[in-house]
Length: 138
Image (cartoon, rainbow, N blue to C red; front, side, top):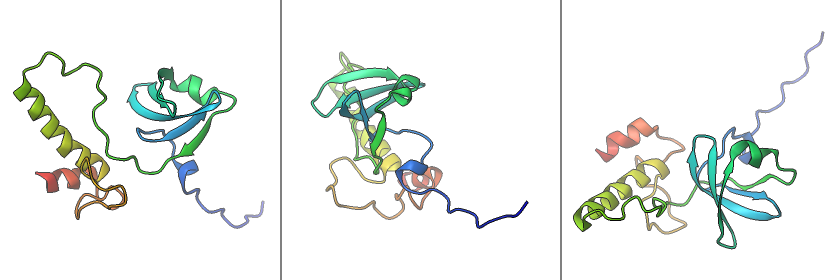
């Protein structure tokens, strides 16, 4: 059995084995952004604004499923699912402060950063491990 040249490893969006928050997918004739993941359940926000919850197996098996854009997600806020409703204002304010730190550690950019800006030194997810980004934040 002869061996030929080894094909190059896949790169780009198709090479990724998982969907992540911030990805855009096409399904049921429309584009949707993945806004939350929980186990095998995905929360999608349609480009038109509608929100749906689907099982990953249903999404991936859809005849028209396609990964549209797997660029690094923009800094995100915690989805407003009512989790903070009813809490004292000072507790909500502290939670929002922590959210800003966590978003920067995960995405490399703080919330509200200019869309074209890159991560601050020590926060680039492409070159720095999550553990090291945690250490830099601390």
